[in-house]
Length: 116
Image (cartoon, rainbow, N blue to C red; front, side, top):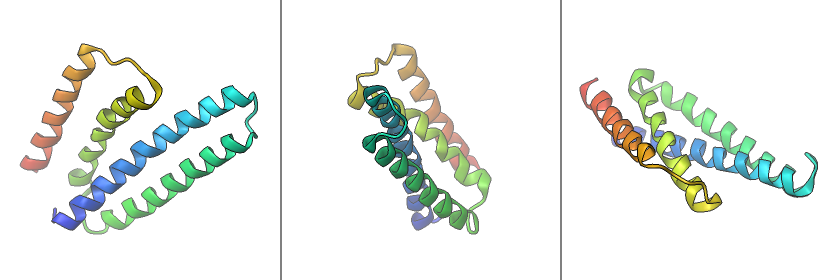
């Protein structure tokens, strides 16, 4: 995978991770307003859906040039980014086993991408 495609795959990963954080924000906004139709709820939801749509279109574009078996393992990085960002933004607690899992995920992505 070339440098540009790698960068675009990572952009997709970051977009999906950001979308997940926005979905959490939607849930919090629903809880705060007591409605699915509050202004903040709709703004966060529209932002999350738009980001997911853009990431999906970019992903489809990338798959024209990159094998799915090479690109998809990078999506595992979202399992690292989302909880870390959620701890920082929302105060979620992370345990020692989480960090052990992060190391395993990172090692797995490295092994898969370097050996395929």
